[in-house]
Structures are given as C-alpha cells and as structure tokens.
Length: 230
Image (cartoon, rainbow, N blue to C red; front, side, top):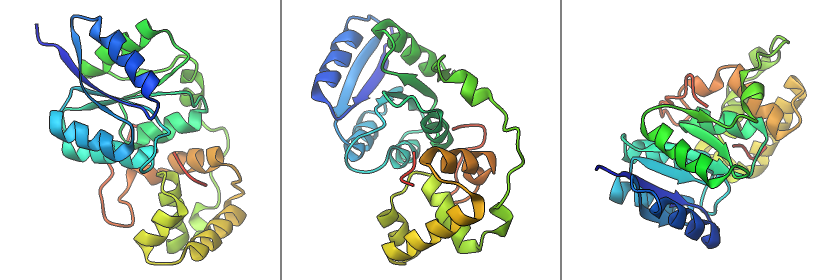
C-alpha cells in the first residue's frame, strides 16, 4: 500500500509529538518530517516532497502566508492543510488565498484531522464546518475606497492582506517602516477599515489576492483563500 506522506509543522513540540503518534497508528499515513518554524517547514517539504503538509498558522520565522507560498514553489505535489486554533474566518480566507487546500480548527477530534489529511491528499478541499457559513457569505455592501487609493497605497494594502509585516513591506518597497505606517493610516482613512479581519476581508472581496504582488510574483490565489499584520 502506498502511504500518504505527511510533514507536521507546529512550534509546540508536544503537539508535534501527539500528531506524529496519531498518524503512525494509521496504516495509510506516515510522518516523513517535522518542523517548528516556517523556514523549517519549507526545508522539510523541499527535502521530502510529502503529499500533505499539516501546518500551524502561528510559527516563528516568517508569516504563514510566506510559508504556504514557498511550499507551493518547492513542491507542486504537496497539499497544505492548515491546523490551527485561530477561529476568525479572516484567517481562513487569507490562508486559502495564499494557496492552502484546507483549514481545520484544533478543537476537532484527532479522527477528524486524520480524515482531513486523507481528503486533501485526494485532491479535495477541507473547510472546518464552524467556519464554512462565514466563508460562504457574500458581502451585502458595495466595496468603496479602493478606487481612491494611490498606486503605493494599493501595494501596501495588497502586502498587508497577504500577511507581510511592516518591516517586510518596507524591505520590499525600499521605504522605511514609518513610511509604511503612514500609507497604512491613509488606507484606513480612505476605506474605513480598522481591524485585521476588516483588511483581510476587504482585500479578498476586492480581488486584490488574484493579482501579481508588487515584486512581480504571480499569485495563483483565485478561488482560494493569506494572515495579516495590520
């Protein structure tokens, strides 16, 4: 029997140990690597090319958005299943926009996670039932403000939605962190956006995640769903 190879990425060793033991009880699943940071997760995927990466959202190293995008670059066959405590639908939208194939909450029983791994390995998507209604909602108000943003303001908004920190945005756009904060303030003023969830939902609804980012990288995000540091 061909077993489904899994890389487990979580910054808590006790959780990695628990997931590894649970997966090893299954005849059709096998853990081929573990990681405690975003960069380590990408390295393990590059080395083993697993069928599934089980990824926690909040890990050291860099944002989960960057991790998901880099995994897509190093292994086309690897499917990404986000397994997290973050139950805000905005996190699911951003992770899926970055290219994740599934989003599952850690409140689920182990059996649900194991079946989710099998599902994404089979080429299907998995969305936690608790979050599905919110993700299926269609905004009942027209988007306003994007048309009034300058080119640089749109670039900053785009990168914020994709999950980049202020420092990362400053480095990409060759400006200071203070300048990034100024652009962010202008975006908030023009759009009325306040919270992280507001920014993420706005960017997804406006189609900002189905474009090239300011560095020229093509984002295959259409129909998918990135976290942000707004």
